[in-house]
Amino acid sequence: MSGRVALTNCGEVLTNAGDVLHGGTVLFSSGRVVDVIVGPSPSGFESVDVGGRVVTPGLIDAHTHAVYAGSRANEYEMRAKGATYQEIAAGGGGILSTVRAVRELDGEQLFAESRKHAEWMLKCGTTTAEIKSGYGLATLHELKMLDVVRRIGEETALDTVGTFLGAHAVPPEFAGDRKGYMDLVVDEMVPLVVSTGVASAFDIFVEEGYFDADDARRLAETLALPLRMHVDQFSSGGAQLASELGAATADHLEQTGPEGIEALADARVVPVLLPASVFCLGQKKYPDARRMLDFGMPVVLATDFNPGSSPTPSLPLVMSLACTQMGMTPMEALCGCTVNAAKALGRGDIGVLAPGAKADAVVWDTDDLSEVSYYVSAPLVWAVFKDGERAV
Image 1 (cartoon, one colour):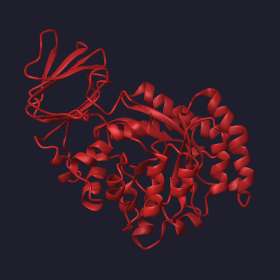
Image 2 (cartoon, helix red, strand yellow):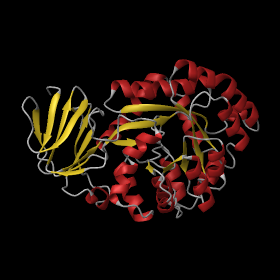
Image 3 (cartoon, rainbow, N blue to C red):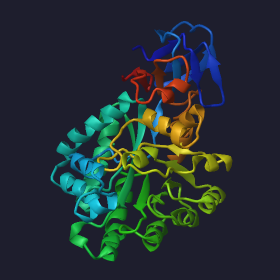
Image 4 (cartoon, helix red, strand yellow):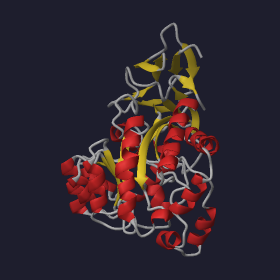
């Protein structure tokens, strides 16, 4: 394309900057949004007629584990037969199963595996994804994962934001010595991650059998990068901890009650909800998104894309679950995957179709935004534009 592109004959244009335009035209130039107008394209732009379809900002997946190796389909079958996530982990499966697979590959092999996952996400309308480490659990392998995250962002159409999740699980070589492993994370891994600039945030999985409040405090006390936290997935109390530590985001929140939600709201911690994880684990308790919205919180929706608890790259599926299981409207669900997700990542240049923003957009094969979540997992992505160029 010429670099100056006009998406013309749009049905609805959801800018997420406060406007819904009917019959709009979206103008891109040099990878940025020039304007969104009503009426025909001005001269000098290459026209792409979208045939009355809905146009939204490119989707943003603010919580993924998309760099991994292998598959845990065997665990999927075990869960179908009644095994719990915790039982599978206690038997040597779960996170540590993927750790073994990641450690067996060099960086080039891991990139080849993970590039497929990036392509799947793009086909689902995702143009920017946060991707965590956490399947290396050793300095060399954690840095290898974060380098693959960087390469995906440079060598595919998917923009990436790296997060260091060294505190995901205790690796086998530190079995029974969580403190020793946290010493390695804080004293060796954190300085290397910061000095190399391969991550924009830290993360920690606070849950029984993984890491606790004192571990989270140690990580927070480094003051090196913003803190994101996996909390309240299987037990409660993590929301208050995230609030105490001033976390940038609190992710999962399935078990968070009214007091925890109020604490997050008071501390301005952004909630990142992962309903596909609840669905894929066969559980019933979803986060209380409606109460969070009533508190005025910028609720974020993300896939938690990983090979174990949430093997899906699809934000449209997550939007459907948000509407059917958490009482969100289609517009609220879209905001959760765009403008609110951008806020969670500390980005002001994505998640909106507004002058100066990145020229990332999805054209949906419908004339009604509600149908994006209404038609569960239907292939409604008609086109994806990344930096003003057609990527899908």
